[in-house]
Image (cartoon, rainbow, N blue to C red):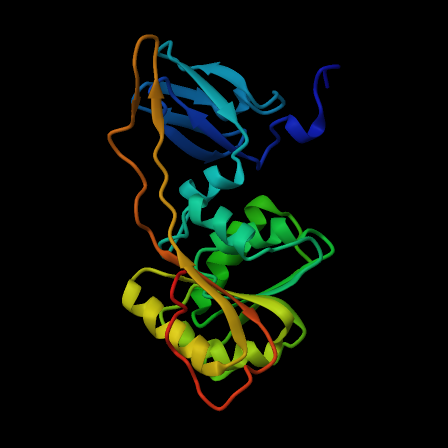
Length: 279
């Protein structure tokens, strides 16, 4: 290995590589010394990358230059094999921040799907934390396991469980409960019993009617406060030599994020299910 190489930044057999062409198109491949990458601008053998630093340029047989990097978590999330639609990187970042997912946290996730949220949670909790990921479908659990293994060769702090959290779960002492489910209001009472005092409940939902149903359930439970809902938009900009303008396409609405803090039961007999009016 050359003096300017570090093992963490060198492409190895079995690694994923993100190939980017001159128009910014992305291609995710897994390096196999006996395989070649093929695209409309030409081809090159994977062996040209194995043993090289990431950020290396490769030239196709037709003379086109391509650059290769190891995929970031956002890159892998967008390009990874999937069964169901994944949560976009912009929403993953907000869930990690507003859900306050911290190193050492114990997190219950439900609706693991293809594993995008699972991967982000594992990175946030670190090796001292724990993620318990539920899904009702065996094929989803298998897809999550495969995608996680593509990034983390070993994940002893991840437990994948096939089960229906609408019917409850056995875990307690949870720092966070993070849901990507169509009816999260069915989990509110279970989450109240499983979360630590001050623990955070997080839900990702596509429609505002689902958000309304969830928020009503959180208020009626009487053990959740600081209930907030928001959505994230992201717009990239094109910066050229003489032109600076927003891209014609942006990532607009993908879903609503709702967060709430677990607390002792709200005092009083009345249940106020109306939001507080802004001053």
